[in-house]
Amino acid sequence: MSPTVYRSVFISDTHLGTRGCRAEFLAGFLKSMTCENLFLVGDIIDGWRLKRSWFWDKYHDKVLRRVLKFARNGTNVVYVPGNHDEMLRKFLNLGVEVCGVKIQMEAEHTTADGKRLLITHGDMFDSVVRHARVLALLGDWAYTVVLEINRYFNMVRTRLGYPYWSLSAWLKLQVKEAVKAIDRFETAIADDAKSRGFDGVVCGHIHHAEMRMVNGVLYLNDGDWVESCTALVEHMDGRLELIDWVAQNKLSMLAKPAARMSAAQSTAIQSVASEISNMQRSLDPVSALSAGA
Image 1 (cartoon, rainbow, N blue to C red):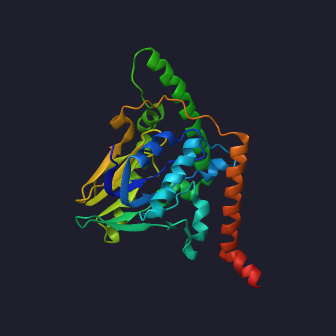
Image 2: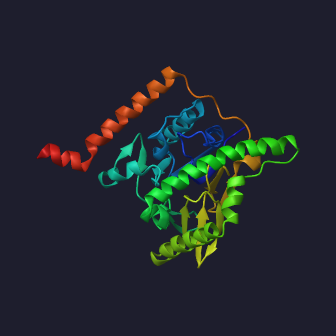
Image 3: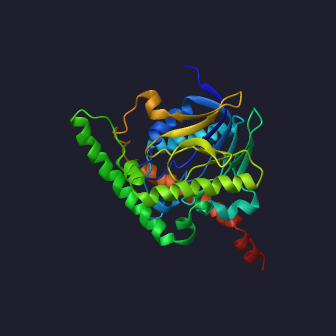
């Protein structure tokens, strides 16, 4: 089938490097379309998890290859780091571009019908991430545990003839304070965009896809690729739409992720990652100043 052509595509919270990432679905989505602009809206690579353990399968590799292919073929690819890939933020002042992918703290985009959008991951509007890092790390661990429980819970539901149901998403919506936090997040990020003259804001971070007006600003959250597998797309006429890849293609969230790569493959990829890290450290302004001194 011919690929679907979009003007712009926005994805976030893929959490590559974790078992929870549905990289096989994301690779399929990226293969199914072409676009003029591809915005990676944070938490694409999960640096928090990779510090503790290394997980990488063939679909993770396909996702990276597909993104780099977009950049080579002329797509404007912009990477806005989030809190899980915050290690990239220290290179922002240097205007680093890796393999055609621009790395920026935030981005702006004007749709075909003239809407001016602010693009930011959104963690700067999360008080827990900003002021209580230990709680944020604890919450990340708890989320991982719930995802694992969710898998076995849904296996039982499937055997009983019930459809897939996200336990973690339900828990977040049932906890009163969590719902309040989401509301505060949406209001804060919309008000900031409004004060800066934007018509709308595109973000991620809270793993909750949404498209609605908040205080006179178009709030657009593209969701995640751990549970919901959603993306925000702009059609050629400027129309914005949330894509639910699992529902659209009747996929099963219970499908087992691909097996871990072989030791040789994993070693090769880690070697490349190490080389990139060394290259980035050589561009670190602090290191450069020290070397100059």
